[in-house]
Each structure stands twice: as structure tokens, then as C-alpha cells.
Image (cartoon, rainbow, N blue to C red):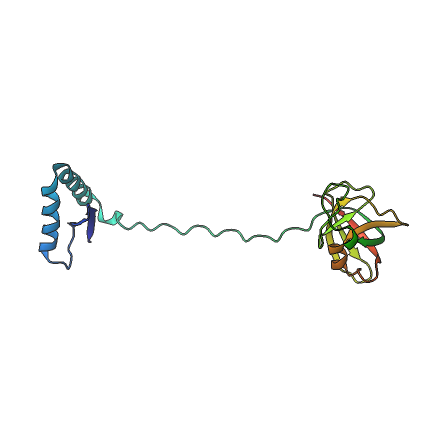
Length: 177
């Protein structure tokens, strides 16, 4: 087996047979040995450790790492409570204004207003007319008109398909964190 030791830009042939002419190995070794006594000690210690090494220890085959478990799809959040009612939406006239939680209302957000749910509560809203649903985060208070149960921001209303109708019958599922 060929073993080379690179020291200071010189390649040293330490043991084994090579297809290289002997002059290359001798030239590299002699040049290294004549350069410094400490380098000669280093070379001899490497040669000694290589000669005393058991050839069967040279190639160690490690067992393959165990396969990683397949990632399971995220579980659906558990439903804490369910209610039904009418939903409306708000948006363009209120963009840039602050909600009751202090956030700025921006176009396309999946947020909503509810009279009593705490800010940050996740709610799955399902349009009973077309079956489309979206998970929204409560960040505002309302609606304050009629018997509506939730007021959706423009992005959520668009996902549910109630922009054109303005009002829709919905099912609300309050999700546990």
C-alpha cells in the first residue's frame, strides 16, 4: 500500500511499493532528512507507527447509519368548540388602520374580528355554501352589526369565496394550540 506524508511541500514515500522510480522516493526523503533533525524524528516516528500497524486495521468498514424515521404528516389541530352563524368581511376602507390588538390591517391577511375570543386564537372558518375553509387568527373586535358571529379580513374572505356576496353562513371551529 502506498503512503505519502506531505511535509513542507515535499512528498515522502513512507512504505509500500509504488510504480514510481526509486529516485523520487530517495530524493524526497534525503531532502527532508538533511533539512532538520526534528523533521527526521517526525519522519521516523511516522514510519515506525506505520510499520507496526496491523494491515487489517487499515480499512475499517463502518456499518450504515440506521434509516431515519419517515416524517409523519402534521396532525390536524384539535377542535375546542364549534358554532355557526353569519360572517361578513371588511377590508379596503380599513387598510392601514390599527386593529383592537394594535396590529396594522394589511391586504390579504388571514385575520378576523370576534366579540369575545382572545386575541391570537386560531379559528377554522368554513363557508357552508361552498365548503371552502380557512384558518384565521383573531386580532380585532367585532362584528357590531346584526347577529353576525365573525368579521373576516379581506384575505380570509377571499379564500372563503364571500367577497361578492358580502355575507355567508359559516361554521366556526375554535382550535386548541
